[in-house]
Amino acid sequence: MIPSSLVALSYLFVTAPSFDVSRFPQDSCIAQVNPYLAPGGRNVYFTDKTCLDTLPIELLQVPGTHTRRVKTPKEELTRLLWVEREAVITNEPSGFVRKPLDTFFERLETMKTYSFGDAHDSQQYVLQGQSVVPHAEMLAHGHTYGLIAIHPSLEAVFDSLLPIHWRGSLLPEFHTAQVPVPSAAIERVRLIRDSVKFDPVVASLVNNISVPQMKNDIRFLTGEDEKSGILSRHSFSSGIRVAAAWIKERIEETGATCDLVPFLPGFGPNVICKYPSTVNTTETVLLSAHYDSRGSFGSTRAPGGDDDGSGTISILSIAYAIARREISFRKNVELCLFAGEEQGLLGSRAYAKELRSVGADLTLMVQADMLAYHAAGEPAQLGLPDLIGTPEVTQLVANLSAIYSPELSVGFTPACCSDHQSFHEQGFPSTQVFERAGPIADPMYHNSGDLSDREGYDFEQVKSIAKVQFATLLHATGFDLPSEDD
Ligand SMILES: *[C@@H]1O[C@H](CO)[C@@H](O)[C@H](O)[C@H]1NC(C)=O
Ligand SMILES: *[C@@H]1O[C@H](CO)[C@@H](O)[C@H](O)[C@H]1NC(C)=O
Ligand SMILES: *[C@@H]1O[C@H](CO)[C@@H](O)[C@H](O)[C@H]1NC(C)=O
Ligand SMILES: [Zn+2]
Image 1 (spheres, rainbow, N blue to C red):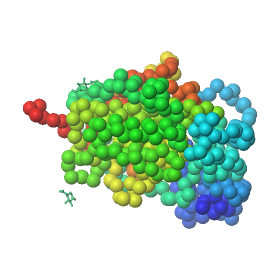
Image 2: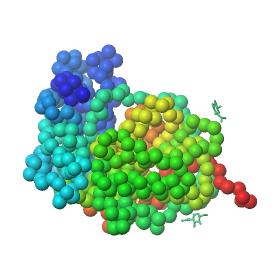
Image 3: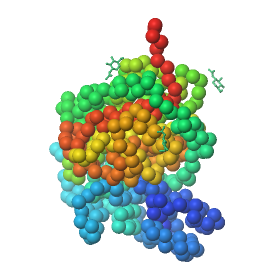
Image 4: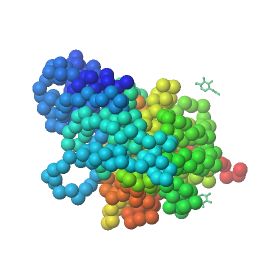
């Protein structure tokens, strides 16, 4: 188990997000350690004092890198949680001094006095009828990150304990080395990128995405349409299972084959849908979003209208258009809706690992996470990742945006890291599409008020970005339509 073995190493070496790890001398002890790539792009090395003492002093002093002593947690706290502040616009005065992670421990105290049971249909605090054990310990921290040991029962709820604008991810039990994207795979993306030019057929297909249909779908997923009965799509809620079955059915109606694939006990499943290729090839193009969500502390609602209901409806809207226009593809296509994203990319991590272990041949993948919101007065936008992902895939997406959705202002975002990171770690070409060229600005981010019927939720922007995802799919696969006289 990691906590005892890793924590026994007793020191953390934490890099800045943009730190080039090839600066470590090849023969140094730290170069032998597989770091944990935290959401946000920091590399976290579990090491010991002896090793740190041998590192060149100028590496230890690079701005943004830290060394931290790690406490040894109580034995029953067997899960390690990495938490960090996200790139979100806030009105906090600069220089405002506080310890945001105190909130986590205060909320934990509140939970100890919570009454569990069905009278309190608080899906966020009841794990399949079992109450959680609210024990955790801070092992090491900086101003914007922390390493916390938690009781395993908190796996299901830690996200709602975190202060707003902080996210957490469970450390995988074993570190696996990051697999670099092979140069042949990058070259393949380059060829696609360099060959794109306006195709009127693609333009007509991507314009088939229907906004009224997206409006219906999001209302079902958020429970704004009360008929759905969904209060929450938190990974452990009953609502996520309703959503999973419904998404599977919707995408199967478009001619795909879908499976609900469990990845960890208690979590809602991944929804994995496939369209076969008309050509004999192993190449596969994958579009994804996460359909789980997160709400406010103390609330049973987690509607996830923007995060990531918007990405989910973008995938559904593409599936509907595939069916309406009877498109067949010259490569394999997968549409995936992941769960467990809010607990640290857990669903996608399991799936990407599985794909790597069976030698899957992914041409590229694009994750859609938060597509709907922009502040009043801002134009419709498309944000692309500045750190995590394959630059060639990101450029391809930017180029296709300029061609098919010129209404979008394209730029980079530090908003970091969604399920594409899981594919990036496994050496698959990947990128993400996001709603803003800049940090997260949605005031309802990770909030129980994340509904679709509110100011700033822009369906036209969702459509514009979905057009880009769809165009990426069509250009990367090649496709056929029924002939006129059929
Ligand atoms: C999409 O294409 C179908 C079939 O050609 C057509 O009936 C439908 O009106 C189109 N929808 C949109 C939103 O363009
Ligand atoms: C598909 O291609 C593979 C590899 O080239 C080949 O081994 C296989 O026989 C082909 N399958 C069919 C149905 O043509
Ligand atoms: C594609 O993107 C690259 C880099 O962003 C840019 O230099 C190039 O001009 C773009 N090409 C087209 C056809 O838009
Ligand atoms: Zn998200």
